[in-house]
Image 1 (cartoon, rainbow, N blue to C red):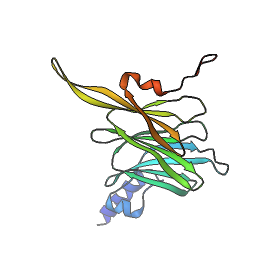
Image 2 (cartoon, rainbow, N blue to C red):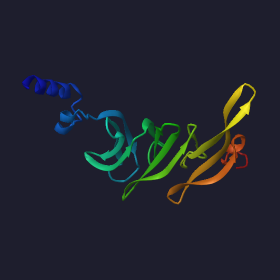
Image 3 (cartoon, one colour):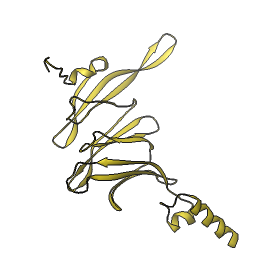
Image 4 (cartoon, rainbow, N blue to C red):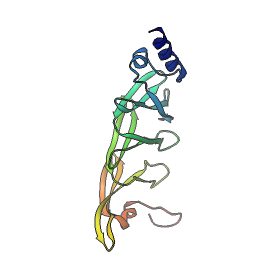
Length: 196
């Protein structure tokens, strides 16, 4: 019995010291940090938040957003974590990308005086395209939908239409659904000296 306890303590101390309660060590359900990022929300008081994605053997991935040691937001996702990044140097949203069994999931978060909230939650079979209309505007998300086409030699999964999501009035909304080859027509392009 003593050997088993020593082995368990050694296993837990061999892992990084920042995570892991006694219960997690005892049950073997240790959380592992998958990713960590800083998010400058642009808030007047303490704008820098720490975003941590942890993998739990039982529950899957969990996104935690902290201000110092205070937890502001927790989101449990059973899906596989792919990545996260802020949309601007300061004051932007936080984009998180997940893989499900057959699709990708895009979750976009916004920091507000009352806390953190999800402003876009959308899935697709293709990685989302992220386009900026203007340096000072939130990005536009292009979510493409596919269909199967039977061609000589087999079937092919081809893009058909794209939904265009723009940020307005506190959330992302689908503003257009266009044929895939015309998906950039919903994006305002301003060139120096040219029309918008």
